[in-house]
Length: 435
Image (cartoon, rainbow, N blue to C red):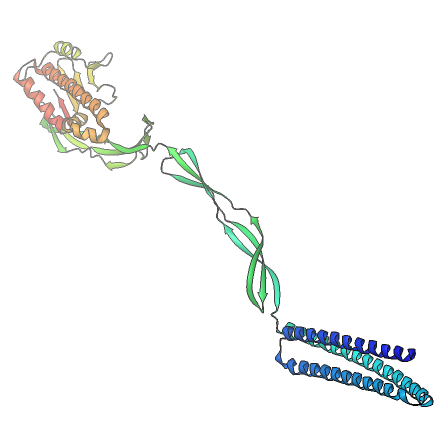
């Protein structure tokens, strides 16, 4: 009796283990099937999964049928207990063998089912692996690269004041040059297309060179030009003419003065007038002079004119302010500060022998205007020159008046006529008369 109870208990325990194992395996299989369904990227694996599930369900039904057969065998053994002892012992032995076979069979089935579960799990892993591989084959290819680019750095311009340059003027003493900045990037490409670009570094590889400009601060100079016209005197060539009476002369060729032009540069800096600079040589001739040719009479005629005595003439000429050479009775007139002879009176043994007058300078002063002087010389210098011309012209006119009186006497008609003749001839630049 105890043996039967033990056998029945073992069978019951085996049935319970099989049932729980089947439930556990079935739950595990369902979880794996759900996981495979969620992770699968392709619908082609669905029929295979359904086939595996159906196979598991068929195996579970076979296990349950086996359990039912075992239970039937147990019930039949209980029925056979009412037979005779020998038969009963034989049945017990047979039943024992059957239980052993059944247990061995169940163990084999359990092993087979476990093996199938293992195989099923192995198949799921393969599927996942394939899915993963397929997923990998369908994923996008990502690559990274590094690249560099350069960017120009503009140079700066620095201005520096320079007192040696005039205002408004600039001078570049150093040329500017742009610098270079090198930038490194990390670029990400997906299937060959740029998707992101990240700056890794930025470095100045070439520094820019500053441009330096000098800016003038010096006050600009006031510059102007003027010129002078210097007279080139012509020569008087005297030719003796015996057909003319003594004291008579005749101009056969008028003389013409020459002109020499000199240009000057005047510079005034900050109110200070710098020394005048000659910019054109004095050799520049505007007009060449032409000599004057005079025929001088040598024919003797009776003296019919009364002259002042030599002593009286010397007294009058000495008091006129004329310059007398030492040891000689020759009286000369020079403009103040000048060295050129303008007027000359020579006294002979008995009376005035000769009068000479070069009216070139006097003539130029006579016809000059103050406005012209201002235009050429400027207001200040023109005013001084104008006053000088007037003063010196009066001195010369007074000397000529004295010479005429020294020849014929003060206030005589002959003296007045001679004065006018000298002045008129002086207008033509030259007068000469022998007495």
